Length: 611
Picture 1 (cartoon, rainbow, N blue to C red):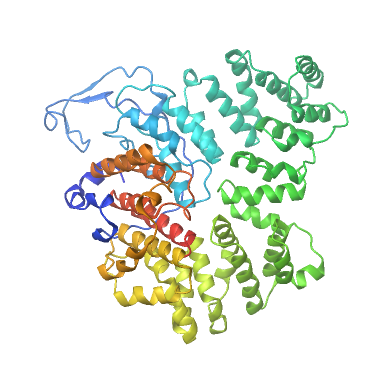
Picture 2 (cartoon, helix red, strand yellow):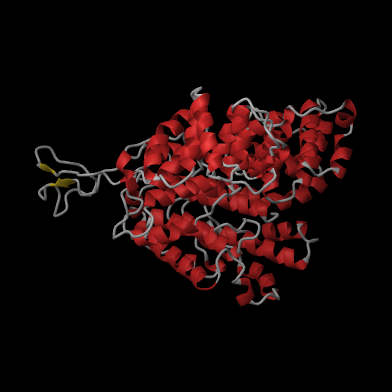
């Protein structure tokens, strides 16, 4: 929704803007949220022209021309020289393809964007936050007003896309830049992104320009060696390798791969414990069998993606990398399914997979459970294996990976009465996998079957309500009471947090929780000042982010609200985020019209907190 569309709601929404900083129990009802649409394909767009490029004659609708951009027939249009287009306005998403609109920074200072954008989450396993951040970074939009200082917006955006592992988006964004906009850092980033994607042609096309820009760096020389090997110029590449050795360049992985490409038996691959895009590209070219340890470190998502698709790596290395890469959303879940299917197991292992999983918590055990469930034809036996796999995954990012992994198998099952005991597990997993329609069928089975299952199904109520695009309401006390009874065996501290998270999520989306239902939260023994330091940023920065979020929301500034919302959550996991931060962020997104994004985040946060 563009800012112009939001303005038409300003009169009604302004009445509720103060909710972002009011107590949770004061949240007012808002319009029903719209369904979340799938992430669109990246569509490269040209850089935007400066807003002042076309000036409409004053006679065409007032002092500043028509507000809707309509030009009456016969009126004059003055066209000015655009000069050099601003590379910072470049984007690959427009409003018709999932972006936020060209005016998303209207009313926002460029200084604010430059300060807050580096605070956005880096690698994140939360799909709702990934989508929001991706749209913010890839939308083609007019540059915010004011005088910029420090790193350019295009550089800040590119850095964040790299940190997220969104290589496809990064490649598309950088390919839309005019050549004069390429700094050495941006050109290096484009080369690294191309290498990770297996696009050696683009990387090598940029190599000569990088050598001119960064003549004192050994990276261009190593890149030239790679490009020479890629082009079949082994002799020239060998001379370059010798020169780098004489310069005492320290890069064991590079020299191991270079030896293999030169026909020399490569040494140990220990140097690949800390791989780079270039060394992984050389390993791919040399067909080096990289061991599982290459994926064992805390690697950026982009490199995990490269290892996951590296055919010469050992199956163990690819499998470990694929699991991590899927969690960060940089490879499709289908690739993880295929990787699990390629693992070899004995007939004895496949006969008793649940017993094996009880003693082995590693990647091989997870692959075994998946294979066993896939091959099982008896529904009751299949759901036993799936339930075990989901139970072992916990409530964190691993659970969401497992939910996405098993979602097709669950959807393929018929919600029959004999599977009633599995209904609650199935519904929760499908909500986590964003298969809401299919989840509803299992909720219906749970509520209408076995009385014991029906009583336990009350525990699903927050998820079913948060996932539904319904009008806000005053929640029945009996419904909340039934939900609390189901969760009554939790430790006091856990129960208190879940109450606060649940009520906060409901209030953020406009529902009213009766005042009496808040009473239990007044027994919380944790002092407020201590709880206030638990978020991603403490002290002055935390207060500044809260203030920025409120001001941006109050003024209906779309891009700025999303910017502050993401920065407020930062790199804190949804299961550890301050419940007040969750409330503020979801309420802000809901109030500016991003109802689908707000609801998706609420469902993900609910599951991450055990709801």
